[in-house]
Image (cartoon, rainbow, N blue to C red; front, side):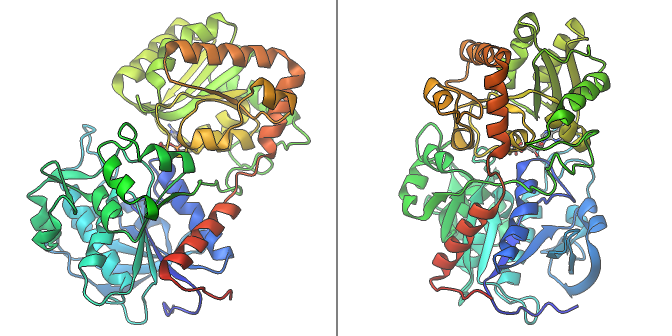
Length: 494
Ligand code: ADP
């Protein structure tokens, strides 16, 4: 295998998870889908991933590239190969850092892994050196695209490097996860001490790996235009608002897309019956199969709401858990798939036990079931208090499942609320509400019941949703234009 780079824009995409090998949330979906979409636009993207067992097991044609210095964390080397879809990938194989099972970031008790700082500084430092052409002969990149706090330090390492021309773009998928560590971690990073300042990594006497990305990247993006604005406010900025306002000229929002090959109701291998915007009969059959799968009452004409999510307060699911009875008493059903806060899990368990024929629940992570729920439900509830982009509403729309969602972040940018103006133009794709509390969510659910009962309108909303363009084409082009801008020259199409 050759790793020699040919013409075109060269990008190293650095992230801690990637669908289909390792996924804890939307980040993995984006990292799995954006690089192939960029490739179709002539951008040469190589992925850089940590050697967690699932990643080492899942990529193909592995060849050792070079041994590297793990900063005292045992033997480490780079392996090159290809992702299941064919994209080139370089993996940091460092067993002392990545040979862990379970959640990549949390231990068995749900706490941050104690060695996360070492894990992601070695990871980021290696990525920066690789992009700068200092590790592997004939391999270098013009752009390092770093995702979330786990890769935030890449931007600092590139700045600390003398004579590097590599530019960095840092994408925030969720500002709530800031990669915070005690200041003693500066020694582990081996960055110059001068980087520990208010204008650098320091954050209220701690070190923030996320802040390294926000400060040192040549450009910062986030995953929707509305979230890009929200994070510049004191409330949405989660302590970083001032910094982000100061960087506003180098901050933009590019909406996530979805992988329309993986999420396609006409071909999806996880759903019992296929259907399309024109031939939708399969959707009703999937609903019946889903009700059976959960042991719920087979009821074709009651609205079946669903949730597929981390069960957290960010997602507003504490509020929904309290309204589960309201859904049932109003004549609806609810299917919930997710895991997270123990109190929210318990509230849904109790609701299911009160109404076992009307509420289906699976606590856990189950990718095939997520697809079946999207295909079988009538509506998905996403009462997020904040939502950088959100992917589940995009999957839902493609599957003809109407989103009932908080008017925040990417939900605001992707859903057209069924208000009278939108309904009169036959343009609505869902229901939006704000702010998020019991009263507003109950009212939004009541609107959903009302619209569902009007078969003509519901059919129209469902059809509109299915026709929305939710793929990567536009956004991949926006990233390509941004990369080209950042390196300051036009790259010819190859
Ligand atoms: P976030 O990244 O904040 O968790 P997103 O909506 O951006 O939220 O992405 C969530 C992704 O994780 C979607 O692909 C969704 O289908 C998936 N997902 C969330 N919870 C589960 C679960 N319990 N089982 C299967 N897939 C899940």
